[in-house]
Image (tube, one colour):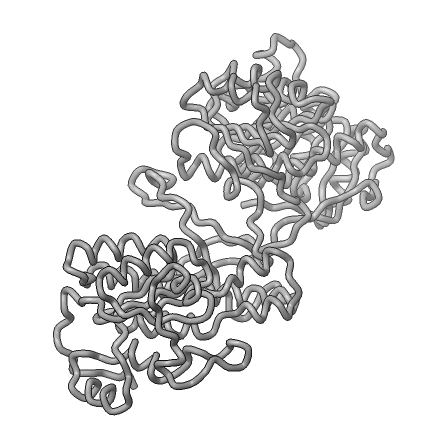
Amino acid sequence: MAMSLDLPPAPDKVKVKRALLSVSDKTGIVEFGQFLASQGVEVLSTGGTRKALMDAGVNAIEVAEVTGSPEMLDGRVKTLHPRIHGGLLGVRGLESHRAAMAEHGVPEIDLLVVNLYPFEETVAAGADAQTVVENIDIGGPAMIRAAAKNHVYVTVATAPEDLAAIQADMEANAGAVTLTLRRRLAGQAYARTAAYDARIAGWFAAEREEDLPATLPLAGTHGETLRYGENPHQQAAFYRMPDACGQVRPGVATAAQLQGKALSYNNLNDTDAAFELAAEFDDPTIAIIKHANPCGVATAASLEAAWHQALKCDPVSAFGGVIAMNRALDVATASEISKIFAEVIIAPSVDEDAAALLAKKKNLRVLSAGAMPDPAAMGLAFKNLAGGLLAQSRDSGRVSLETLKTVTKRAPTDDELRDLLFAFRVAKHVKSNAIVYVKDAATVGVGAGQMSRVDSARTAARKAMDAAEAAGETEALTKGSVVASDAFFPFADGLLAAAEAGATAVIQPGGSIRDDEVIAAADEAGLAMVFTGMRHFRH
């Protein structure tokens, strides 16, 4: 049964007469303590916070003097006491609460400044399990939740950034804090404790190797508000989410924007797709993305060479695209990229000369991510549904020469095998149904998102012919290529369309009830074909 109290109206302003300060992150706490002292506020404090305040000349009363109980159990118990929680939870407008507080010597606490033990930082530093557990705060969240619940009378601050707003409010209101600010800070306080608990729960799940826990608490930190979402009528924001080990995956979440306009929702989505694709390869690689699909990917001896090969695949779609690479962006590559219009460039780092050259293009966004993501790393990927989330492990699957099974009379040549593996790795990042033609470690045709696989094969071949014409060539780029399919060919028609386009070898998962028909068609067309036993649907 829900509890209810007959409460008086909430006061608009509450004067701060007594404050409790107990923080792990002491940024700004001394200056704020000095401000409170100048306002005649009585300051209670604990441990290291009290020492910092006293050293700065701020008289801070030890919490133990209020509770009548010393800190115990190596500091695990110090604020968990009725005189503290009563001071935070007491309803000043209720006579019964005031009488109980007076009877038991419970002082009113009007302001609580608490930030929590550095659990997230401890996990991220790779500490052992015992150290991590010792950095789970108990008293802090309990006080924060108490103060936030009683925000009608109590102001709660959970981050150093809150202190300036409280000080400004008090200065403007003769030492009082307004209900508007108290309510806003209360909401922030609950968000903070929720995120803290979510990260603790995530760490425990990871320790148990529980990839899909019974309850899925998620916590993201607001990075920036975006102008709009996929369309102008949609609101949007970007939230950063560390994994259970406290690490943020390298990419758009870690990137420093060196120049250019603010990134949009679609920019961020495409940039993430591009960088994840570039990370799949060890040799210098360029990936060009348009609307979350690759329109050109190539690996070469240098980034500059890879750029030219990637661009050749679909120069029309590359216009206004997002460009990612897995090496530091050098000035030679930057010079070539600057010859076309691009929305975003992302690299693990950007050479000084390259940055100076690109600075001439003021609207071009240039991002330095600091590192490359590990394509083999585990983690969860999410998709929204009405009323819930779909969760799955990230597609970190890879095939190798050892796992391929030749199913045709002709086995692929070494060159074909190299390109087949490249093509299948790219296909993992193409929307299904996905068909990818590759020649000499560069895509020459990409068919994405079609409702039938044969349409994807034909679309990719047509685009390859358009690209050949743009390059002044008379022969389709797919002539002599290999082709990858992200899932099995349900009929032979898609495979035959690839053969008509000039493909000589095929890589696909296999597993269709018509595999024998497809294999027979490949043999009749003189194709080599390998099965991977692994598919890469991407919806």
